[in-house]
Length: 238
Image 1 (cartoon, rainbow, N blue to C red):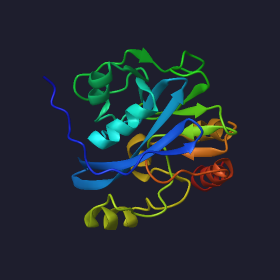
Image 2 (cartoon, rainbow, N blue to C red):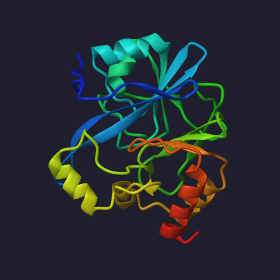
Image 3 (tube, one colour):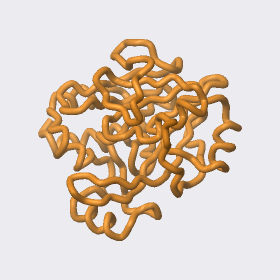
Image 4 (cartoon, rainbow, N blue to C red):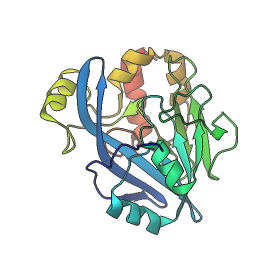
């Protein structure tokens, strides 16, 4: 029997766009020899009666009851190699289909039921996937064709304006010094681990989108394309 990580502190599920929901929770882990205690986000997309969870965060019983009131969980999307701790919990609880990139590592002995591929089948009708081609670990971004284009990212794109209530003092200090707290940022740790290439960000900049929901930070509304294009120019000279 798989033992799942317990639910940790999290906020309320909020509807940030019609049929698109967002909730912030907690992550504790050890990376690069340091203890990290910070916030992470899950996006929930409703298509008819079916729910798709992206960047899963385990919810407590009250949170699960709220989730169940929105529809039926049918799909789980793992879009970043450094996330996925709670995928197995949702897969077992709901019998959900797990979608991931080929070669994506999984916790709890999971394997993907379906693969995410450019121009391939997606779990809901108005979705497409952007795949980074030059990163050391698999990573992709989901584009939802609503409200002028909504990007759902994992670690590659972040929008942490500052540390929130889900941070430890140690992580708040460390991550401030590392430059995590910037609007429309590319994840500093993700950059270190993956050594991404400028050409991927050229392709991403050329996509049409207005908003971004990232695995870390606040929703970025209306000006996401402009803000990230400026950041890509600063980081990659494109």
